[in-house]
Image: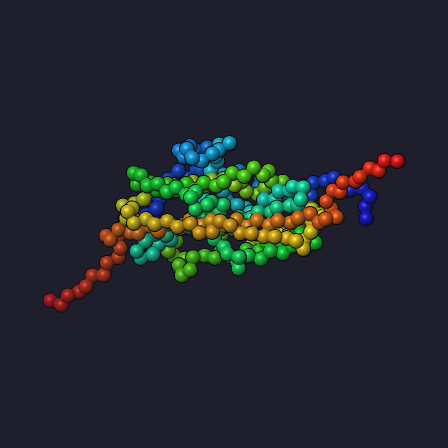
Length: 137
Length: 144
């Protein structure tokens, strides 16, 4: 595990009943949140984050970047069905990370496929390894 | 065939097992959304049958295998890790990878021949309808 993480976790505890600020989301109960499982890995040019957010439709994801904090909120539809056996609560997802300035915030891309959110965070040019040519003198 | 059917909760057994497991992990794990079993399952019942849902993000139909036989439902899922990424490149690794199988005991009276499954946004929904014989039949009262 790299010592110098470009993505540092903020607020490791889940935020209960967080007011997500969305007025178009109808709720009969307060929305509850859990932290999604994530994989974060590094390539030469970028950091890639994969988050498990099953049950979240394409328009349910909010990604906000403010003051160097990357906030991921994924809203899940509330179902009225009361389960007779329950191992998971279909809660919405929330997780936040500190972005170091080695990430080019303008270039962040996001995609959602089969309940997995993928974020690619490109490194700024200065963070990329540079080959130094040796010139003959 | 029995004349009388005891009313009992067919889900009580697995719930008991689950609560014993959860005590071991504690509330801490649950608040973090850490699932103690993969894939996590929910089951609901209505007059026409049983619905089982499983969280299986990042899989396609070919990564799943569903078997309904007799009184049990077996779900196997293969969760794939990102391709071509060396172990040393990870900063965080929380998502499950590998093959997982769950088996659920079903209540009696379901028609396992008519099971339907659908996959959407990483959630698998399996519908097991009640067998015709098990559905309540209205009995007409003949006037004498």
